[in-house]
Length: 456
Image 1 (cartoon, rainbow, N blue to C red):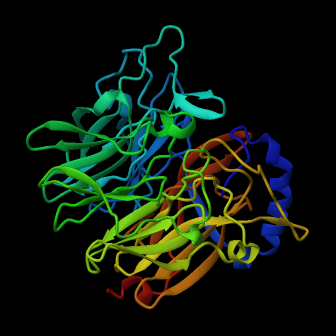
Image 2 (image 1 turned 60 degrees about the vertical axis):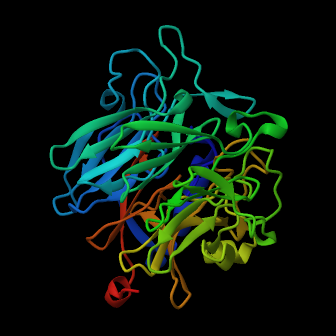
């Protein structure tokens, strides 16, 4: 699922050896197809994909280029047609301004009012002491103007811009209370929690959530939460911190408060120094609200433990380790230093889909990578597996590794969408001669009809 660096050359020989083993076990694999969106600057995407009610798959391909911003596309599963929805920099009204472009959307789309709501993020970084920082503009360019909150009308195929988030930072994390038309988010790199009222067109800075966030140094550094969830009944908003604290925002008194009854500092998750970079600490990696259970389900990225948090009792319950079977047998964490974002609940509201890593073996020896890292990245090469987990009967299934027809594997996968056409969609690095690019990928859903459709 991952590669050892962004250039790709250091693992070329490893890939050849791994492809030989993959071909020998082809009957056990899931075959993936990738689609060429035609964006030459496309780079790793985190979240940024959605199966909409109109049947289309919407996705953003990110860019690290100083010249080109990220691009939003739609894919029609029936015709296989790909259409460009727009350029993120242009949608923000910044085309031709020579500012650092809107290179990313780091968040999941939220559908409401026949629109898709999302936010933009910087993709052009400066690496300082091994850690990504806000990009320093080269000569002739202006600084990053800040991430925007946007919506895309699926009928008119037009964008609406709601403005820049607090302190001109990027939008790292976002979700929306669709009943109250309130958008919530966390900025990068400092970690300001904000709320935007669509009806009132009002942005409110609710303050820093975790020391100085990823702009901090030494004891003030904290990796920031990548997933916010909302109880639609109460409007309560929940996020975590690297220290393992779960925070709750109540919109009525307009207060952010920590949950004191329980936290995410679990021995099962591992031992972390929250002030050190290169891991998510005790943060949850990806979470979702389950309306039927009135609870939050999520994954701790580094360890792969799946858990449930009940806001009524304010208790965290560890359910299962849902990493791949090879990862479980190895007893090791997956190679992506932050863990994987590709987790979501299926249409039946009982099956959780998880795209996760698996150690690679050559001649019986596990392939290893870096021992540590100062940022979120792959520490070594890893296969991609699809795992499903039924939250009603607690049934775990590892459906095996995912490969393309030529034996190569999708890399750097941190996104997922469950289509209505019985296919699973995500974005990852795809093979294209000697160049590394990211694009849309699909696999068939391996679940039986009754498993796919049986509701909670």
